[in-house]
Image (cartoon, rainbow, N blue to C red):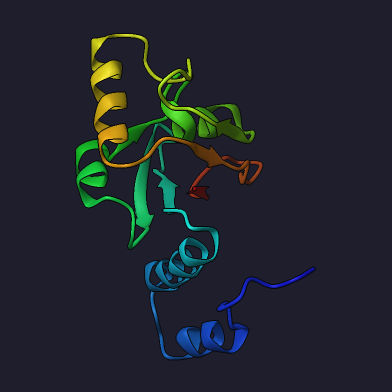
Length: 141
């Protein structure tokens, strides 16, 4: 399998050896992915209760969106990440303006418009859960 340009295993090992935090390492990886894919990525961590997603990394993700929606609830029709965490499977949203997985009320419409006003129009969240479904990061791109 081809590696992403800019992802240097040696650099990651050096960060680990130097005592970098998980957040620092994931921020580095998000930066490389963002540059490679011309995207904006974020890694979220499910809280211990399994009911919320908390931001862990994403240096290029719009800070206003992170601040407005952290923590983000897990559940059906909770956008891409909240739905993926709830279902435990990959969710792909090709057009946020019409996707039904946002809350279907006035608050959900305000959230959808806010996110889109900050340049986010599509998203995907892969299935990445342990069997216990606890404390596992979820990636959003």
